[in-house]
Amino acid sequence: MVHEPATTDSAVLRRTEEHVDAIRSAATDLTAVLPTRIEAAVARALASPDGGSLPRHVSEIHRAVTSIAEAVRVVSRDLQSERLGRVGDLEVLVDLIASSAESTRGDLQRLDRRVAAIESALTTLADTVSRLVPTVENVNEKLDRRIRISVQTDPATTTFAP
Image (tube, rainbow, N blue to C red; front, side):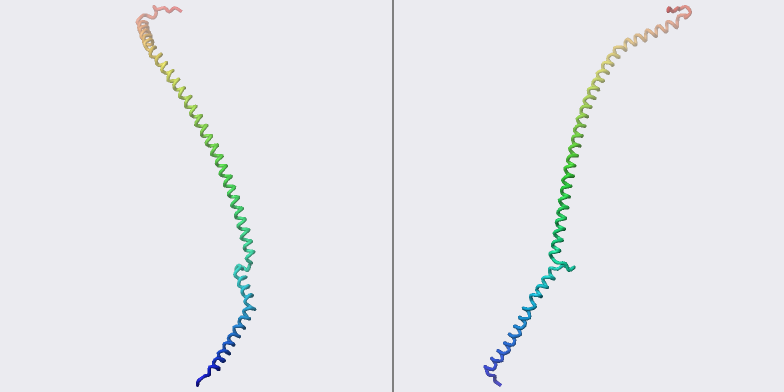
């Protein structure tokens, strides 16, 4: 069975037109439904799991970021104030240590002068005592002799003049 080219072409043309009609019908259906489906898909993509809208979540995030930024500013300001307070405390402490060291130096200088004066007085005293030692020994010897003499003499014969 041999087919004629005209009949074959017309059958192909008819099938092609049927397919084109099906594609047109599908395109018409998609044209009607597709914008709604795309809109719903975008809304689902932008919606949060709890069903809230993206602008509301963006607004909440913005408020949270603003609140955090303010808290950071407060902490930064408090830290700066604390640093300045500690620097002030350190300045007072350094001044106190410096004045204490200066006072201690003055006290040590006064003590050095007093020790030098005491050393000088002790040297003078030692010189005086060393000069007096022969005199005291001489007086001691004389007293010993008198005591020996008075013990050897009769106490009844010795008269003491008032």
